Image (cartoon, rainbow, N blue to C red; front, side):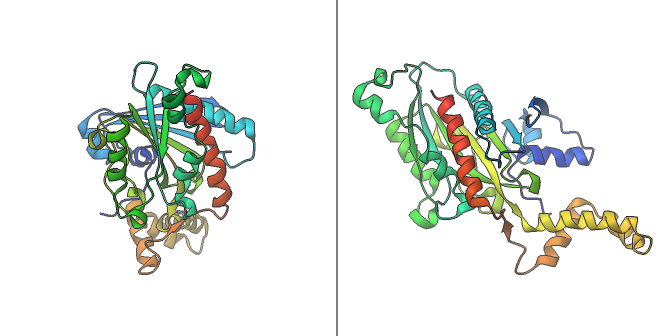
Length: 313
């Protein structure tokens, strides 16, 4: 059965809520931080919940900031501060000299996939300074030992990202890995406006059907926090959403309401399958990104990097 492609646990949960299906082993908490920032926490506590949701057990925290595309430095600073608070809650409890490896996943040459590399470009790297001059050279004894890497993609290196990361971990022995990657969303309104933070790691490329080896605690041997922002949406999703609007308008029309009533009998999965058939064979694998994605990725990468710099300083 065709499933809607999304990397966001919140959207997976919303699908079940829409169908009035209660999932045992899954908890949801919501917090309105401000008028324009909303946080939803999805906790998958059991294996049953994990199987139903199609995601590993763990915490999935979604920070929704509908104005993240605006050039408002104070607003982005507020988002960064909230991101830093969330990351701190997921960090392992350890001694002061914690070492962190930040990984920027994605392809720098493909703009919607360049979030991870751009974030790494703006991270405050401290490992080399601490190794050379000691921690007090940073004038802040609370600063974490931070290193970073951009492993590229398999087409560029011939290696899985997980292979490169595992090799770096074996050599540098960090206490925590933070992975940053672009995601795929179910809803157009969440593109470039939502940050997901999870302690379950990540499967690079899963949202666009390009499955690679997982990067999580089981595969690399240390805790992994994954941070992602959806930058693309499945073309079939857009067609399906447009179909819903069309059905609504048909139901209001006296001449076309019989057609609208017939189409209203289709559930969401059937509508998506119909959309994919209409798009076949040339467009059903297409993913769509906003036209201002260049500026969006640049702006969002600063927001995420600022949040990480705050979390580790």
